[in-house]
Every structure is written in structure tokens, then in C-alpha cells.
Amino acid sequence: MASPRAGVPRPAAKGTILIRDISQLATQNDELGEISDAAIFIRDNVIEWVGKSADLPAELAEADRVISGKGHVFMPGMVNTHAHMFQSLNRCMAQDQLLHGWLKTLYPVWSRLTADSVYTSTQVAIAELLLSGCTTSSDHLYMFPNDVTLDDTIRAARSLGLRFHPVRGGMSAGVSKGGIAPDSVVEEEDAILADMERCITTYHDNSKYSMLRISLGPSSQKTVTHELMISSARLARRHPGVRLHTHLAENEEDIVYTHKMYGYRFGEYIQAVEWDKCDCWFAHCVKLNEGERALFAQRGIGVAHCPSSNTRLASGIAPVRAMLDQGVNVGLGVDGACSSDAASILAEARLALLLQRAGGDPRGLGVREALRMATRGGAANLGRGDVLGQVAPGFAADVVGFKVEGKIAYAGAGIDPVASLLLCAPTSGTVNWSIIDGHVVVKEGVLLAGDVDQQVVGAEAEFDVAGMCAAADKFCRELTAGVSEAALGKQ
Image (cartoon, rainbow, N blue to C red):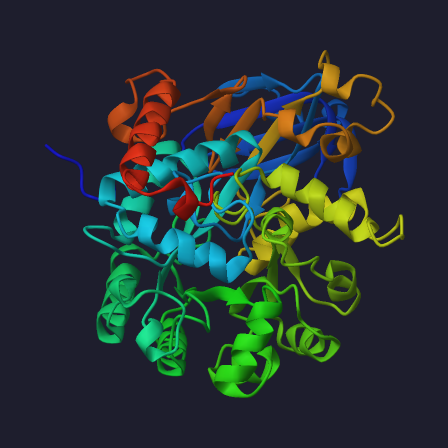
């Protein structure tokens, strides 16, 4: 029998896992702090106990599965709060363009996307994220050409076991209505809203430890009308747990466009379209001024900081230090692989750290602050701060472990192994263990299959990375066939 288009949810985890003798545990919990020679006890899909291995209660000393954390740094699974996973098939394109030119170069390529290519592209992005220590991610899909639906991305997430927050986006204002996207790639607003409703009623799960929650996200003020922004906000607020996400204040072009079209800046814009509440988080926010940052802090609006994308597209450096000092919640985002060319949340945390120091202040952003953005900051953006982003009793069993012992990249960093994850070599710091919702997703550096159809009864099946990469290369060729190198922005 064929699986549904969106795949099959993985059965809830049953049983116990004990991770003991952890060399260093960064819990991201204010009370527990960082613990050396630590242990974590997991029952089903929830963390039950955390502390020193020597203090482990006798009744928890045995488990269905015991993992040695010796030589490892363990921490909460990181949370990615901005991505366009459909872009993973088109890396290294439009290499020297600003945002608007970059988009105009790529819209025709993306118009060729199909359900199968989006599925593969999303798998590639998720595989990269998982291996970088991410366990939860949002994904903003705003183009629906040919037979593409949000279901295709959900199937990809289920095939790898990622905790998923897909965003049903959309574009309704093409060039004929003052937008920047071709009219051929936009949708009718009634159709967008109808499919948003379908996605919510079919897939949204607002339970405490949910693996799948839907958000809504018209693409940006450059590609949608005020009416769609307002209608999507009101639709989301009829359904508990459905949040709102889009782009905002990404570069100088955005300032010029918003003022030309509407006569005001971003703070007035989000209030005019009813996106000024605590159920909203925005990507980039490079160009927020002091008053707009104050509005974000006052209303509890979150920011997804995307440093690789912002620097690749010469958009600028987001004022993260100022945001944090003003009380704005900041998480991290890898953005799409067309603008970041990678999907490593750990690498984004490192670049965020370095960029805030580039102005001359060595305390512009600390290692622990960057890691907090990657964990608790991201969890808060997604409305999951009560169960994600910390290793503590009652939190979801989403933990990752990086092996630092015996690794050249971390040699000589024993004085602070937690800091070594960012300061030494995040790009080579492939996670050694990843547990999501109580299921082992990465085992000793090997990515496992999360799809029920791929699993072997009584065993853990390795995910077919080679097959996925071959499919990605095939789709890349198909999407760019017949397009000139100049049109692709190739150097």
C-alpha cells in the first residue's frame, strides 16, 4: 500500500535511554548550568533526570539503551528558525548580486520545481541540519509551481525524523501589482488562504511535544498585498499554536521599496497588517532602527538572525547586540542554500559571534550567548520555549552530542570544550549522536532513516545519503538546463 503524500508519522518513542559519563553537558538551563561527568535519563520522549553521573539514582542506572558520553560535549538539540529548503538544489548561483537581483535571477529556475524535486531538496537541507546538531527546524515554502505542495516537505521531514515547523507561504503580488516576482509564479489570494486552512486542519498538532506544527507566512511585503497579510494573521489566530513568519528589513533595498510602496518604515508596516504580536517572528531584521527594536521587545516579536545569508548577499550586519540589550528575542536561521550555500546551524552561531565583534568590541557577542540563540532563542521564536532548547527534566528528549576527544579540530581546547564547538571548527563538527523525540537519529556520526517505510524491524537502518545526493544532482541539472551561465550568475 502506498504511503500518503506527506508520509507517515513515526510512532511515539517507547523505552528508556541513559547517556552517562558525559565529559561536558551544556544544559542551557539557568538552574542546572554546565555539568562535567554528567548523565541524562530519557523515558519515552521526555527527559526525566539530569545531573552528575555520580548522583544518578540507583533505579535509573539501567536502561533499554545506554550511550557513553565520554569524550563528548552534549547539549540541547539546536533550533533553526528560518530556512527555504526548496533552494538546496541551486547552490552557488547568482554569486555577486544583491537581494532583489538575486531573487529575479532565481525565480525562473524555481518555477521548474516539482513535488519530487522539492522533496529531495528538503531532504538535503534536513540531512545537513541534523548533522550540524539541529533537531527542530522551520521551513518557509513560498513558491508552489507545478505539482508542489507543503505535503512534500512534511514527507521529507518525516523520512529523517526532524521535529518540523513548516511555514505555508505564498506570493500574490507579481510585477503587474507592484511586486518583484514574475506574475507567472504568484498565486491567487483565495487559493493561498484555502491551502493555508487545509494545511492547518490536516497537519497542525498543538500538543505539548508535537513533532509537527504549521505556521503561515506570505513571502514578504515585496510580493504580497496588505490584504493577504491581514487575512493570514486572522486565520492563524483562529487556530491555537499556529504562528506567523516572514521576511522583514533585510537590506537597504527593502527600506526604499517599503517607503515607495507604502510611505512608511517597517514598524508602521507590521502594525498596519496586524503582524505586531507575540505570535510573530521575522527573518533578517538587518535594518531595524532603535524604535522598531523597542516595538519588537515590547510586543514579544522574535527575530531569526541569518548571518551567512546576510553577508553573502551584502545585506549588512544585523544589530544583534542592540536587539539583545533592548530585550528582543533572537534565534538563528540558516536561510536557503541559494544564499547561504550550506545548512549548518552551528556555523551560523559562530558567524553571528564573529560579526558582532567585527565592529571592534570583543564582547559584542559571547560564545554562550550565541549558543543560547541557537537553542533557547530558536525555541522561543517557534513558541516552544517550554519544551525545547534545554536539557532539563520535563523537556522533550532532543539532545545532541559532539565528539571532541581524539579530534584534530578540538585538540588543545580542553580548557573549554563547550566554546570549542564554535571557536574551533563548527564546519567539521559533525554531530556524533542526535536524539529527537526519544528516537536516535544520528548514531556515531551515521544518519539513520526516520521513515517507517525505510526501517528494518528490530534494527536501525542507515539513511541512503548517496541516493539522495544523486537525486539532488539530477534535479539540479534539470532545473538549470538551457539556462545561460550569465543568467545563472556563474563566475
